[in-house]
Length: 276
Image (cartoon, rainbow, N blue to C red; front, side):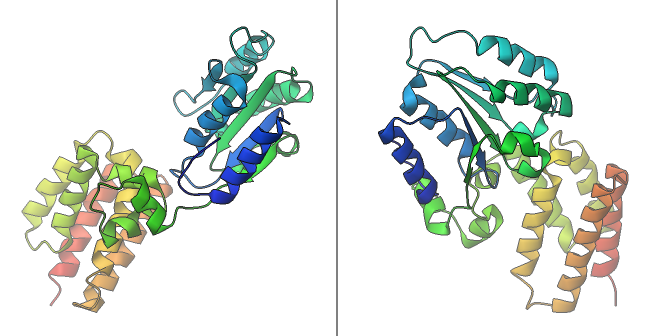
C-alpha cells in the first residue's frame, strides 16, 4: 500500500484500487506542480504489479513528439515477462503535440489487458477531451504548510519560504538551488539600491546566470513576498515596486526582450528609490 504525505483523498482512492485488484488502463494525475504527482505515479505503478516494468516518457526540449508515442505503441504490445503488469508514465503529458496526442488516443482505444498508462500533468486543458474521457482523473491539491514541513522534517522552513512555496515541495526545493539563491540575492540587492552603477552591475551578473530566464517568474514571486513583508515601512514606495515587478513580468510574458526587461527593472527601481 502507498504511504504518502499530502493529498490524502487521492492516496486513499489509489489504495482502494490496489486492494481491489481492479486496475484500470488509463489514469490522469492532474494538479499543481511540485506536489508529488510524478512520484505517486511511480509508487502506484509498483503497487499494481509493475514494479520491475515501468517505462517513463519525458518531454525533450519541452515537447513530446509523435515518434515517441509511436514507439510507445510498439513497446506496449510486448507482454510483461518479469512483472504482472506493465506501466507507462507520461510525465508533463500536456507537452504532447497534437499528432502525439492522436497517436496516444489510438493506444487508449484498445490497450492490452496487462498495460496501465498514467498521464501526469499540471495543465489538463491542453490535453484532448477524447483522451481525458478515457482516463480516470485524480485531482491533486497544494500541500498544506504542515504537510510541507513534514516532507522536509529537518529543514528550518521560514514563513517566507512557506509563502513562496505555496504548497509546492518542488518550489521549495528551488530555494535550495545555489544559482536560484544567487539570482534572488542579486535582485533583492537592487530593490532599495540608490547607486545606479551598482544596480547595473547586479543586472549584468544576473544575466550570466544560465537558468535565470526559466526561473524568473518564481524569482519575481519571491521578490514580491519579500517586499510585501516590509509593506508597512514606506508603503507607497513598496506598492510602486510591486507594480513595477508585475509590469516587468507582463512584459516578459509578452516576449519583450528579456535582457531589456531586466535593464528596465533596474533603472525604474533606481528612479523609485531616488524619487524625492
